[in-house]
Image (cartoon, rainbow, N blue to C red; front, side):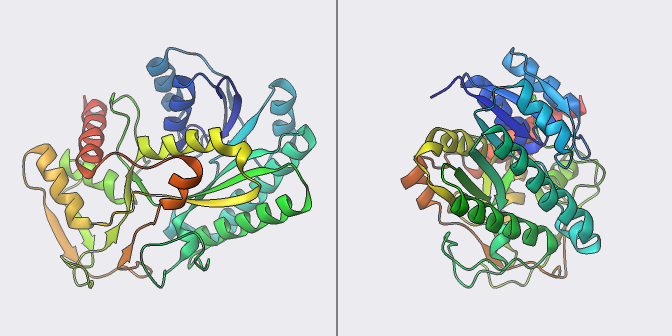
Amino acid sequence: MTGRTVLVTGGAGFIGSHTVAGLLEGGDSPVVFDNFSHSSPAALERVRNLSGRPFPVIAGDVRDRQALDGVFARHPVDAVIHFAGLKAVGESVSAPLPYYQNNVAGTLSLLEAMQTAGCRNLIFSSSAAVYGHPARMPVTEDMPLCAVNPYGRTKVFIEEILRDLAGSEAGWHIALLRYFNPVGAHPSGLIGEEPRGVPSNLMPYLLQVASGRQPRLLVHGGDYPTPDGTGVRDFIHIMDLAGGHLATLDALQDLRGAEAFNLGTGTGYSVLDLVKAMERTVGHALPVTVGPRRAGDVPVCYSDPGLAFRRLGWRAERDLAAMCEDGWRWANRRQS
């Protein structure tokens, strides 16, 4: 079913903007609510140019209950996709209180507004960080949740809040989407990841190395028990991840209570696999230095995404080459 009005909190961010583009392409009507603390209104202007469709954008913070009540009063919201929140692991360790305030308190404010408005359909942006250091691979949704940093713990706490809420009140349809490692960009090159300052994630940093904005890539650890010694992760194309939200939205009414789903490819790629794929994309070698391991990193983490296929009818389709090619197209457009 399309034609829905969907409130997208944090819709100007990397995952949010691609999901908004997908909603527009599919005939839905997104309403974006974002405080632009780690994003830019320009991303949404690019989405408008890409889709050729206007949509409302409201500047506001999810902790502002009055502002949220105003959104629900003005728009007939059928469902909410909740991306808004802080997401840098290292920053959460050094400054945990803003993470609990933004992520947990902000979600409580949103849930109260939804409850008042009578909207019971929610897709929550969770994370593979809820698993901490998994005891086995691939990671399945029934594994213990034991996050090892404040960012991951905010996701665990919110998931528990959502389960409690769904258990206390009939009529809620809640999906907890646990992402692995989103990378790449829209194939048009018009929207992509745009971190402020020095990127903290591998792909945007690698793109800056490829475009000469950073001198070299520092790989954290070359002595892991993996085929090439570098960490292995489940990189997923941002378009596949956005598609996962659209598939979940279509299946949401079939969910009862709060249900968790992994969104990943099910394939583990090493850091050097990604580097080599990017080198093939750009046509030359990239400067790389292998340094010591980084505290808190796990050697290997990749998903079992089978539940999402069985329940949501979704699976990732794009490979590592597409992730690099689309990311590089976006980086080149931003350079020009």
